[in-house]
Image (cartoon, rainbow, N blue to C red; front, side, top):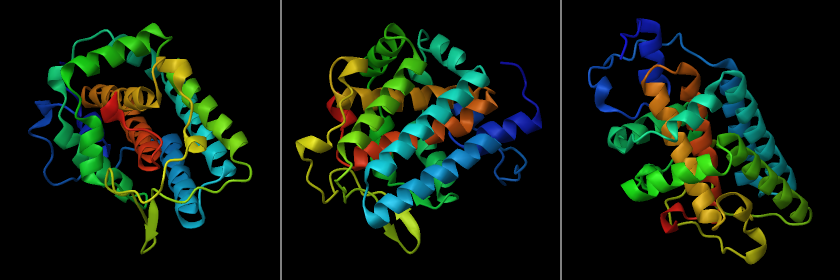
Length: 260
């Protein structure tokens, strides 16, 4: 790998989610503060605001519409940066041995804490601790069904359908507001019931169930983080955003990627 300059190194090691042990010598003093992605930082703030509103007052149709918009902004940004194309190429690579869930958990939680969201570390760790076979199969499924743009659009369309179905429904459960911060509950500890009308229909993408669609989102987040670690700075914040959206859907009881 080509030697990265200090600016790129700081962005990949401190901004969000590097997943490989290649950065064992990363800057211990966290002195790098000049790397930013203005578009994705704004999107992260908007995601946090939408989630705060839903956690405080209940999730309704407007929240689902906002989340669909977040996904489409994410996709447009990745497309403009050429990152979607890089992601699709990575779907053919055998990179399972490079994953480092513990580093991912640490970097993800640190990033979102700056945006007022406290991720549950155990839940996040569970979502990104893939076994080798399922990781490879999900990557193949993403590639086979049109690549990551198809994945993004499937998620956005499902969220919009959910918005139309929820015009008179308010969903309470999942994230909560405590001391001015959004907190995600531990997996299995959400107090809500999962009625049939709250299940988002993602069959159109993976062809199995919502559990596998959510797992596909988590896998894409991991691949983005891998690209980030190897110098793709535009991949860093999108990785955090995508994983957060997947965790949100999971925390609301709509999917369980561990069942895929």
